[in-house]
Amino acid sequence: MNQIHGPAQDTTLRLLSVAGEMYPFVKTGGLGDVVGSLPAVLAQHGIDTRTVLPGYPAVLRALSAHHETVRIDNVLGYAVTLREGRAHGRHLYVVDVPELYDRPGNPYLGPDGQPWADNGIRYAVLCRVAALIGAGELSDWKPDAVLSHDWHAGLVAAYLKYMPGPTPAVAHVIHNLAFQGLFPREMMGAFGLPDQAYDSGDVEFYGQIGFMKAALQVSHRLISVSPTYAEEIQTPEEGMGLDGILRARSNVLTGILNGIDLRDWNPLTDPAVFFPYAVGDLAARRANKRVFQAEFGLPQNPDALLLGMVSRLTTQKGADLLAALAPRLFEDNIQLAVVGTGDRDIMQAFMQLQARYPKNCICHLRYSETLGHRLHSAVDASLIPSRFEPCGLTQFHALRYGSVPIAARVGGLSDTIVDANSAAVMEGVANGILFAPTTEDTMLLAIRRAQALFRQKAVWARMQRNGALHDVSWETKGAHYARLLMDMTGRHPMAREAENAIAPRRGDPVSSPQNTTRPAARMPRGRNGEQASSILPFPRTGTRA
Ligand code: ADP
Ligand code: GLC
View (spheres, rainbow, N blue to C red):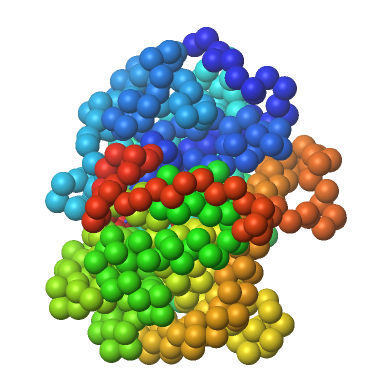
């Protein structure tokens, strides 16, 4: 294969990232966002990242016509065409096996909403190809390190371990321990792993083969997507059966919070926002709320607390609790806008709420990147009542767009949000509202607390401004990743990282409305009208099976 020349020439570390999804090609949730944004972040630290992805139709479409191919004849019984090229600035290796990946819609689920029956072999082939690249299959590029994500890439470390010769070290990122990739023991032959891998416990998990288990057991480093989640998953309550191994490997487990791409999430340039505004400019948000209410058929009452939720509608996200609680909120004249898709029962419950309370509740039960952005530019508060949340990205979106997050005190939510308790309000440091445990009653109390603060205009505005100032960027988090990878491969952290310095605040400065050149407002295109944006090519569903 000829090398595709890019900015990788002077880099100090070659990194192979492996994942089941990547924004902007294929995304079912935050996993795709993170896999899609990390390469640019790591490039700032001299890391050349190339990502191995399955050859889903959307990925192949995005790959430019000018790509190189290499044939690998027999990967677990499949003929692989490996396509290398650049798309949307990302350097990709795409595993093209039409029998396995040429399927429309959600990458993991069939049209019946169930996981594809052959998901084991689909992601084993992905992992196997990644391991082959890691072991030097390509003549022109060999990675120094591998970054594998979630269960879909969980077998890479195990394949590498049982290959002869020197192989790169693997850091595995745990985005969500709830999805583990469990398959029957009888698949060992199909997965092409030696019996020893099972007998030694490397891939065995209670009599089955566990992709996530294998990654936790064999990888050199483990990264969870927030420091609190790193602690939580070491407990029996939150460890999903894997807490024992995580405790045993706690010396290599690090929690690094996610960030978001500030170019995608900039209310001044975001095409989804009706009245563009600078981060921290609260005046334009009032107009956005008014138009949003009109677009969604809600009464245009500026004093009604408008709550929003953009989420997979699943029990992890507490969407069932919100649906059950909603009638009690509507008694208080609260408005609720939901953009989400997921479990059938929960979607049904929201449809019923909308039919019963049309003046209070509007639901868009589908995946819409545009509405997912617009909502945070217009609502007063964004609800995130998760039962568990490894990191969560929607609180970052809310903070940046000036919507106050009301969230469960779990995982990455508690690492991001400063609760508006009386001390924090007095000190002027609060940026949201936290509640625990995750129940209807605690959520109700939190929302009532929000309502009371919302009436104190100055306090609420201070919370919004604090949120806008909060560093939601990848800047410092990227440096953590880089340091970990450099350390894992025996390299010295780069000088610019300034480990002991107080990091300058990143994220856009909060500009005053006076200094802001505000582009013309974009008016709605009628109820539910979508504007052109990088909308993803298929609907979200509720699971990452
Ligand atoms: P998770 O990955 O567990 O679903 P995150 O908060 O990490 O949760 O990331 C969810 C991502 O998916 C965010 O970028 C969010 O805006 C987006 N998202 C979720 N549901 C929808 C939807 N129905 N429409 C648009 N974006 C959505
Ligand atoms: C998972 C988690 C979510 C996290 C995302 C990206 O989907 O559920 O909390 O933000 O991965 O790391």
